[in-house]
Length: 272
Image 1 (cartoon, one colour):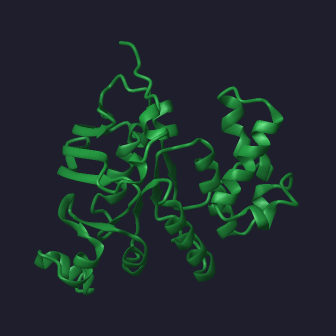
Image 2 (cartoon, rainbow, N blue to C red):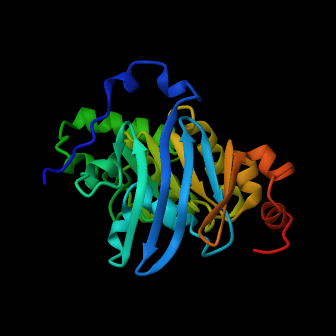
């Protein structure tokens, strides 16, 4: 079967669609995810809107990260994992078997819990994937490096040492470099799996501010165990419990007047 290449539609590049918060970036319809015979995520239906930050909260093992990793098919790397239902993105079901997952992961980039810079220079961390994609012109690469690092609020800190090892950066700087590396691929959506859980409070604050700054250009979905973080940075919050989506609403409502008793008990710290 011929692989589908997900092209970035011109209508999203040259219109005001990306700034219209009524636009749906992802429509998840009746999606379930399994590990072997265990149903880890159960019949999820929800919409994720463009240029918003959507936070996924819930206790450990509730299905948040499994859900997140399925959006750009990173879950495929787990041999026992399978899924059904739909994740609709620009009219394409991302769960189809013939999706070009390499292209998909450019469109929907991901940053993990622990910073994972390549053991290369700061510059090469940004350009590695670009060169692999066939971009070789130095001026083009230079421009993308600067633009990506600026968007990741890291340029001023590293512009005089671009050819130093990325491993010499602090943990917070490494995480922002990983975000810059993701931005360089020109995604529409950025997935963040607890991106600041391993960082000190100052670095955490910088990452949170970065997320708020980035949402004007990107749709962001973040898994976090830090409910204060979810309350500070997200527009919508989804509460997962035992693989179920218990409640999904505007963040202010989830944290002040949730509809479900389970949500209230989790938010108030009675379990989790």
